[in-house]
Image (cartoon, rainbow, N blue to C red; front, side, top):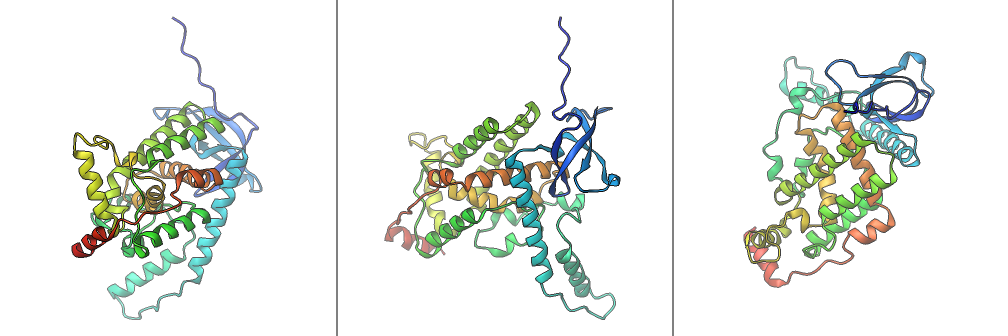
Length: 336
C-alpha cells in the first residue's frame, strides 16, 4: 500500500503574501515554515512572517488561515479594509462625548463612561469577551428591518458594503416602503444561485488550496442556512409580509410549483443584500472564535465587492418592482 502523500505548505519560505493582524491585511514575507505540532493540525502548517515596514519585533508565527495570496483582488480588499477603518475612527472621534457624572456609584454614569470608551476605541483594539459572544438575543429574530434599534447594538465585525450596493439598498427601501411596490417572486436569479455562482467564481479565479475550498463551501452553505432561517423574521419590511405568507403557503402546498423549495430558491439579490447588512449583528450572537470571524468577514467582503461589479448588478438585481394592487395594500393596512 502506497504511503499517504505528504501535505505541502500553501506558502513557501521567502514568499510575499498578505497577513491579517486584527482586522486589517498587511503585506508580509514568510520567513519560516513549520508543521503544526500536537493535536491542533487543522491548518497543517504555521508561518513566521515579517510585516512590511514593521520592526522585527513584530515578527510572528501565524496559522495558515491568516495568510492570503499576494493578488490584485486581495490588495483591493486590504485597501478597502484600511479605508473603512479610518472612516470608522473619524466617525467615532466626531461623536459628542457624554457628560460625566460626578456622583459616585451612579449606574447611569457608569453606563455613560462605558459608552464613551467603546465609542472612541478604534476597531481592532478590543475583542469581545467570550461570554458576550455566547449571548443570544431573542429579540433579534423578531425585529423588522425598519426597527432601527435592533441594528444598533453590539457589532462583532464590519463588512465592506460598496457604495453601489448601498444605493441599491436605498432604492429597495424606497420602492417598498414609499412606493408600496414588491420584488417580483420567484426571482429569476435567487439568492442560492447567486451564492453558488460566487463560489464558482472564487474557485476559478483564486489560488485556493483544498482547505480553503472546503472553508468556502462551508461559508456558502452557512449563508444559505442563515438566509432561510432569518428571512421571514428579520429580512422583510412590513409591506412584504403578506407576500411572504403567500409564498410560504405555496411552499407547503404539495401541488404548487414552489412545493419543497427553500426561501433561498425563491427570494433574490435584494434580500441577500439585506442579509449582508444584518450579518454583523448575527455574527455577534454566535460563539465563533476570532479566526473564524476573520475568515467569514474576508469572504463576505470579497463577495460584496464581486456583487458590485457591472455584470453582477445587471444580472442579479431587479430593475423594476411591481405593484401588488389595491386589494393587497388594503389588506396590509388592515393588519397593522
